[in-house]
Length: 70
Image (cartoon, rainbow, N blue to C red; front, side, top):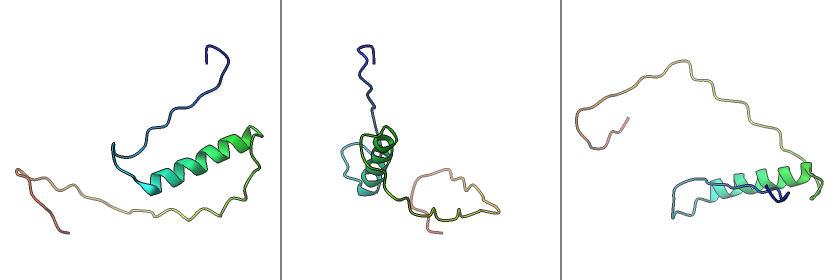
């Protein structure tokens, strides 16, 4: 940036793991950003899915490790 060259840094997901859902979301975000900068053509956006609303939640605490099946 000090030299007038815009740059972005992206870190997603777990280290040393190939996580395709994060890669796809990141790629789509970069494409949108470059399209807004008029460097790529804009793509038609899909209608967003409605959010899932949670009416309540609970925390479960334990004093030892293991697996919990709910």
